[in-house]
Image 1: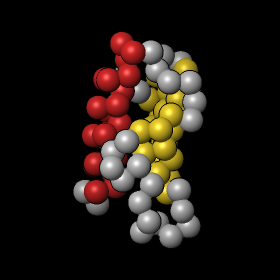
Image 2 (image 1 turned 120 degrees about the horizontal axis):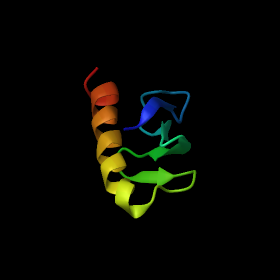
Image 3 (image 1 turned 180 degrees about the vertical axis):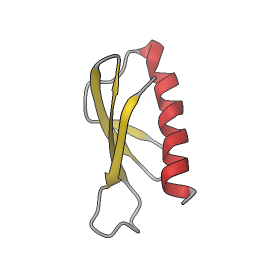
Amino acid sequence: MLQHFQFQSLFENSQIPGWKFSFYYNKQLFSGIYHQSGKIEWTSTEPDELDKGKLTAQIHELMLFHVYEK
């Protein structure tokens, strides 16, 4: 389970889509950029392939809840 999920807009004008995010998973910090299309661009070491799909799905859910369902 990912912990301490944080995100913020990439741009001063928060109406422009694009967000940077970070979280901890298994005591390791991960960060990336979430694009409007849902594409995730990792700015840290990418999670291993076994965890990447699960984490990507959790990030999508969190972003949909926090950004699009305000």
